[in-house]
Length: 428
Image (cartoon, rainbow, N blue to C red; front, side, top):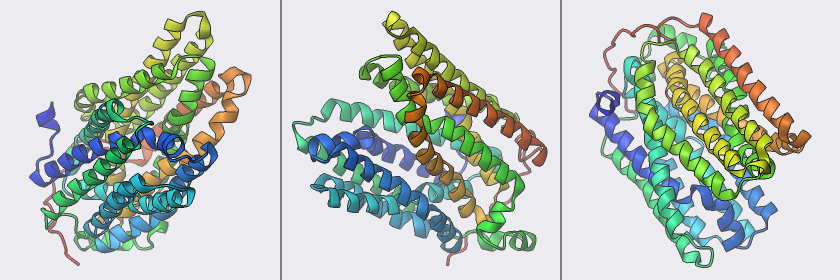
């Protein structure tokens, strides 16, 4: 299954290797920023929260600019500086000693990350054909989670709030990991250049107008609406809603939450390749609708764990872990389909903007979800929160099904796309 999921072009395989290696560095630091800023660097909880929130706001604000730059100058010329900024910013976290310096470093990292994901997705899309993109994006997601899991295990055994040098070490290692995909991209001089010159006259005419042209794409608008609803009631709830409900309502320990998140990663890594194989030739909109149903099931299981509460601590713990694992299974369906469908709808001239808007979905929901989770969990002992997120996920399923009539069978993944000759990159 792994051999079948690998892209045909060796350049794409090397890009995926960079994803895995940089994800290990990301996993070293991902769970610890709040603890580092508060327990090691002495920031108050409120100030640390503002620093982390500021990162999200800046990233979201600059994402549209990143998409425009990718289309105008090519992903290569955007991704390489972004990787360098990420490396410098992440390494600088080891030197943070005040609120002001934390905000400055957070801003630097946000500038680097604003176009990084959309740029890397654009590069990978340019190196793969329609027939293999879904498999390759699924493999990319599995490698990302595998790397984060490996990094998390390593850092969990090393970091100690009584020894700040342990945190400084993992941030410096994370900084070095951002240089790996940069070196790989530099070794591929013909990869990541501007694609616009390969578009047909019709495509150039239809794509005039930048983001307005993207927003005029009715199927893509529907996909964005689906993504906003699903991620707000799904992904955006993991960090705050899931954790708060598990600890305050289901009354499990933080260690159980850590086990649950580990179970989520294990589910993704073990099932991703099987899922993408089973999804070949099947409706993408049907898969997206199924994701909404799977996420809703996960939240219902968590709700049942909350009803169990202290009456049976073991059952509550199993429910929390099962919720995260079921949620992970839904992620294995969403991760290959969403970027594949986005790039099936995109033209070469606007591919960067399409991918930027797709990544912005997670930024917007990442602001809405945490802000609304707290008050909802406080209402009716969490029952209102469960009802809202379950209802939201099922609503997203209906939106996904309404998208099917707007797509061709090839765009929906129900027929094999006709192979096309790879365009020569244009250097600008």
